Image 1 (cartoon, rainbow, N blue to C red):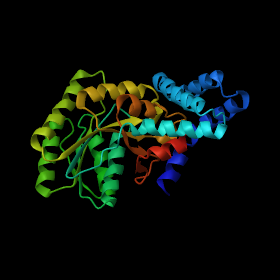
Image 2: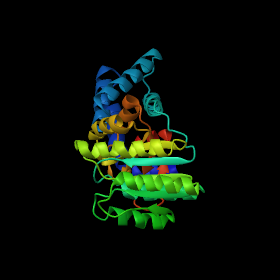
Image 3: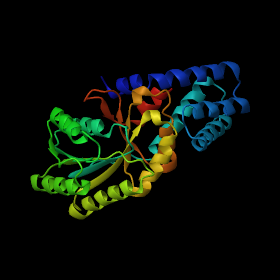
Image 4: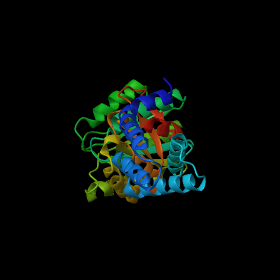
Length: 298
């Protein structure tokens, strides 16, 4: 199945809710001030932030009025174009190798599973991959990552549970350098973003990579559960401050009826979405595509 098929299917709940509200809006309102006010409300109800919703609708209104257009199809296409532009305000990084990718996020978002899927993605791209089990806090996290690494047929660097995560990262970096590995994926413990000691540990791992492997292209990705809604914004702000994020990986996209917070993260924080998880199987992760996401959203 193509990414379009997967993303369209994953966003089915979102599309059903938003599309129904849009149809009702066009039926009951002529395109005027009341129409645009309700359009804002529809976007906000889909977890687009108030600020982004206001900016998007203002741009739609300005262009529609400027062109003296009140056609439903035109206004809908215009809305899609502006939302796609909002997503593209944060360009997706083009991967260069050797690459080190560190995955951060709060508890329960699916980091370990996501890393297994991304490892499999790069293997399919003919890249050599190593994963580092630097989540040494959570019971069974190391074993879980090892299972996913075995499924993806990649190497795993691990220590005992309770070990120093930065030591795991050090050993993984040393191994990746020695073997000429294309991609090193680092799992980290789920951090409650109010826990200062855990955030400091994250910064320490960040420093280890920067110091020990300066020639690598280092990417730091926040893993976000798509069902989180607008709380995703505050999570992104905290992790951005801690490790200067390069992108976002969305999980559980098929489990949300909203997902509009993605527009706010790209437009307001300038953080691109890099991958989207669209199911539970090892192949159910895809590079993010702004156009297809907008098409799936409406």
